[in-house]
Every structure is written in structure tokens, then in C-alpha cells.
Image (cartoon, rainbow, N blue to C red; front, side, top):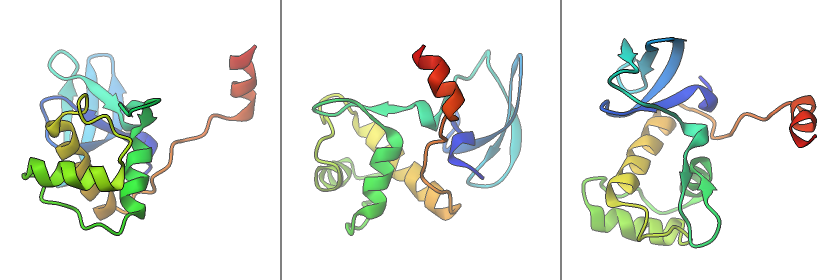
Length: 139
């Protein structure tokens, strides 16, 4: 499973692998329990993990940068249900985060998602755009 195929679905807890998409929604597989279900785009919104950015005190960073900092850290993951401990954890692990604009609920999701990514041995990397496409975009 690749990081580029992972999505977050509003109204559903956890992360999902995008199995296939249709005009009226998507077939998604949960990373937690491996169940597959149809999620209607009338009810749910879908966000690719690759497209999620996090506010910092400077330029926004891609979510994968936060996950990489968490992976490189020797700090133990806090209990996601303790917002104070989660905030203190991120102050140590990724101090550039803008703590006024990144909510407790977002930091809690980052802990939960990181745990799911590690449990499924997913490599934390953004898919690269082939060089031909990059050249066309810059023209």
C-alpha cells in the first residue's frame, strides 16, 4: 500500500485506502479493520493525505513532513485523548507548528493517523511527478 493512495473521509474515523472511485463516491478500505465500504460524495468529503498541509510559523508544510519528524523523534507518542500531552509532544517534535491555528483535534488526528501508518508499514513519502510533467507545468 502506498502513501499516495491514502485518504481521509469526513464522518468516518481513521485513514482509508482509495480502492476505486466513481462519479457518485468511492470504494474505500479501512486501515484499521481492513473492511471495504462505499462512501458517497453526497455525504462525505475526501482528502488525499498528500494534499494536506499544516500551518507553521513560516511556510505551510505537507503533513508527511510532520510524520517524518514524528518518525525521527525519540519521544514516546502521547495518549491521543490528552490534548495537553499531545500539544507538549508536538512542541518538542515539531516546534515550528502554529499552535494557534492547528487545533487540538487536528493534532489528535495526526497521532492517530501516524499510529495507523506505522501499524501498516507504510512508507512516508509523497509520490514524485515524472520529469516530463514537471517540465510541462513550468511552461
